Length: 539
Image 1 (tube, rainbow, N blue to C red):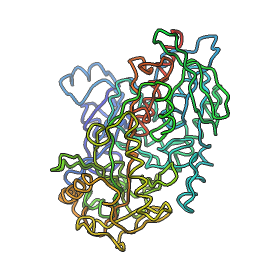
Image 2: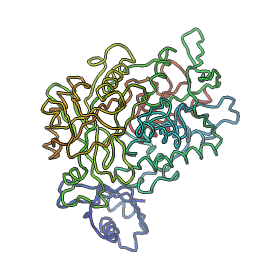
Image 3: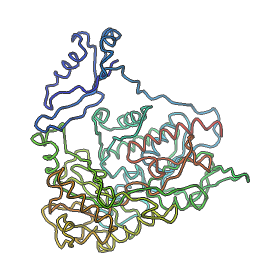
Image 4: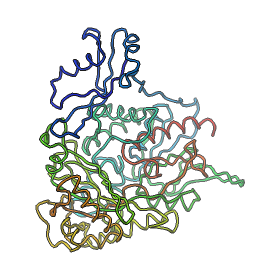
């Protein structure tokens, strides 16, 4: 099999032209092209009047060796890599203590799935509810302003990514093609086939719900066990007196203990009480940088026109997205985060008396507004000194302030961009209707953001307007605050993926500081499952 990269065709090319282009590119007859498939399809919109589709193709040809020899100097034609997943181990014959996976986000359920496929029959613990019930609870906040601290946009089956755009792409290094394993399992569980080849795959909330349910069904069919409404409140850690610590079990909220020597900690970035427990039990935790800012909304049609010009609305291109960065004069970096084309801004708090925003899209990306986080990078030493959990206190401070400024009802503070740039409070909103539920309160967002962030975002909006004309339009809406961009802590681990000071504890995914997004979290879950399987016999 040969892989062809950078095969370019016009946006609206007829289907048969793709085969012709492959034949021409390889210099073979049509009869000698036995088969081909699209591995990846992207687009190049730098010239908006002539957008190109850019294909990566896997092709099977007659006499491949001869074709390869003839094209040996062509860097865009190479042997196709083998992306088939290979298990690193199988379960030993006798497993007295089953591994425990805490958390059912993409990291947790991909870790549990691979462990189950290797025969380990993991026990999966989740403090929240099954995804269908969790969806109802989350809508309870959005529609009625009623928060359930155990079942919301952060906690419950599927993790925080369930109520997001469902983006399935990442810039992580992935030499073993673990990302392909994640996408393949998603397709098996009901995701559309196109996520295997489009350049920026996404799935949307409603489809992700089905995927999460079907993955759970496979884990259970392979002998795994899910326990919902089950919160881990402590770890049973054995200390041999010589400085060596090892997990021997997890303690549940009802006082019972599950004995185990292998615990995967895939709790997500908002499990603040768990982080407090881990620190109290002596597990090494360090603070890490994250970001703070707001959600901004524009008409999706504006973004489409800016990105695609006359091709805006083309079904192959879909709703346009963007990624922009500005380095402000006060030394801060401002960037767009988790851009959601054709989506909505959602309430994402997990604690009473706090307002947190995030973005979400359905698979169709058909809503009127585009939204994205516009956030400012912050660091422990400069912005929240004071210990491993100081970032959590920093988050809470601004989330509580947003709750207060929004009126104390889970309505979010919002402001027109024109007013924000002018330094005056908004008393009403304009043509861009904010999508955040349970509602917004027009106000001055400078009250619930650090001053350095306000200064940097004001400068960045005007810089972004030069790249995306209309970005700083007066009626664009900003809603605050965005604080959960990533975990404020990291739980360091060694090359064997175990905690640096507590053997048997496997910090994993976004909450432990090792991922950012659905795909990278899923990949980290696979890596941890492999490490656990390889370490099982040693421990």
